[in-house]
Amino acid sequence: MAGTINIFIVDHQTLLRRALSSLIAAQQGLAVVGEADDVSEAEPLLPLLQPHVIVVNFDSKEMDAEGAVRFLVTQTPGARVLGLTSETDSQAHARTIGAGAAGIVDKRHEPEVLFKAIRRVHAGELWLARYDTAAIVSGLVRLRTEDAHEASKVATLTRREHEIISCIAEGLRNRQVGERLFISEATVRNHVTSILDKLDLSDRLELVLYAFSHGLAKSPKQTAARPRRDTADHQKQSRRGKPGRGSKTS
Image (cartoon, rainbow, N blue to C red; front, side):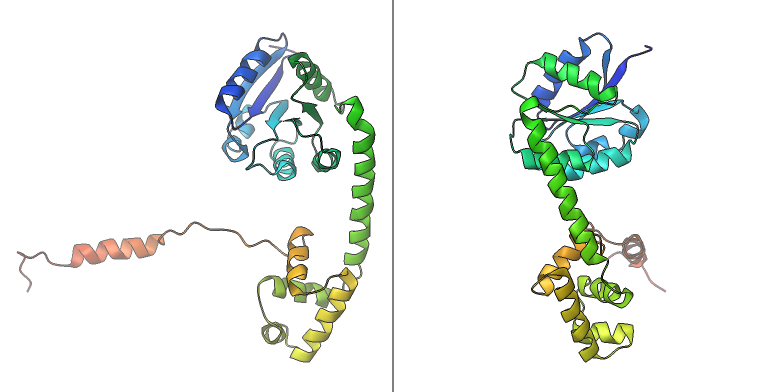
């Protein structure tokens, strides 16, 4: 239907998700095109369904609201993300808005508030509760200031120091870093001292955490423990090749 706002719901509580879906679908001009328990379940559906607004319950214990918003905004650039929460932490709300959310709706409001928020964010507006607006704006300013300060510190790092940070994030010791970069262990120690000083960090552990959180190194990916296909094929072939108890060999 022309003019219909298509909505996708992400909520880990099935009963509440279905109730919310029914409420939204009953409104003129609103249609629920899909549902999911979490972001990972939503991932393959979003490119197919192309919703205009994604309504997400931020209160799931397993959910990282900021990470979820960043992912959803990247996965469906044309969609607007609207969060539902009972939390009143304005700083957390500011971080979520900073990550790309178009608005946050307090669960204690009447359903009509959610319907209005959906229409507003779809129209390109930012939806915030009146009592939260000043605190969130203040929080966003503070976060942007902090980001700018961190960026200025990172900008002081040399190319060699970036290389050393990457090596340390891989778990290499000074001697191993030196061998990889063809420099002495003493030189590596001097670089590490300089890096810690520039980034205002106290030790290598803080450096590794800082590197992952600020994009100076790639976070290690968790891979499922499963046998390699060629190994499994080799084992099958070996079993086929073994003679049974009653078979003859020549």
